[in-house]
Length: 345
Image 1 (tube, one colour):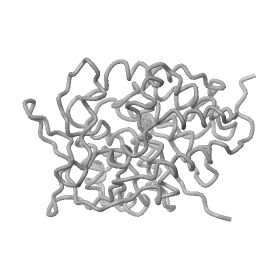
Image 2 (image 1 turned 90 degrees about the vertical axis):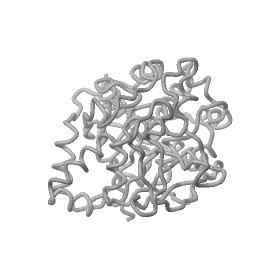
Image 3 (image 1 turned 90 degrees about the horizontal axis):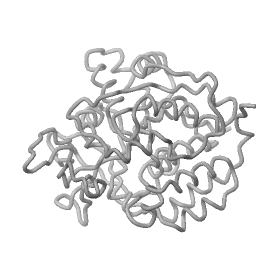
């Protein structure tokens, strides 16, 4: 019998995080062993923990005790935040109804749980990082002063798959510009044109992950730009009559999300999730990368990825993706039938 891939998800519980989480929880080849929540991205921390705990009711009684880890409330550097409308939508779980309320969720403090888990873990684990680097950056920073933990992380984490970053046109053709300003609409509070949001939220957290020594595959904007979230995909999702697919369809129907379909939304986090089992969905190149830590408000290059062949960490970067194959893989898993979902009756 094929061994299931053990995955810890680290999420800021945005709309595309729900897509990634549902795909992995639904996938019979994946064993989601914990979901860590960060309050440094889309969702506020307490709401994110509550929403993830209730999301588990989509996957039956056995899923209800999946550990939900209460993570960071502030980034390790800077104080960058998503626009208020993004955070409000995430807090409201995009008005998509959960099947029920998780009656007794297994909620733990993230750093304590992660420390204890890895100190006693002897099986390879994949980390899916889809909410910025704060939670695992904090863990890796702690390990710098704890050789036993450092050794366990290096042996226990088989790989990190991280949605984030972009290789700029200065380093690759055609390259990908940042996505900070396009998200801000008429309220341009940041003028950074070179960074991607997950890295921008916490540049130091991302750098600590890059420099950890753990193999890291970065699903960059260069690849996600090849997989826009279009109406044809949404139509196919809407045709799937399962509770999990119906939940995601409701998330997609939230007005702010619906407005982005076919325009500015991409298959960000679910692409990263899909590559855990099907890495051939993307083409990759290895770059030696640093995350820019310097803030210059007149020319903000912070959180941009710097190719530095002497000091940079070797990172496998997804630079293109096969849109049709990505859609097919995601929808294949969403069409699978699970046992009945949790009933609060």
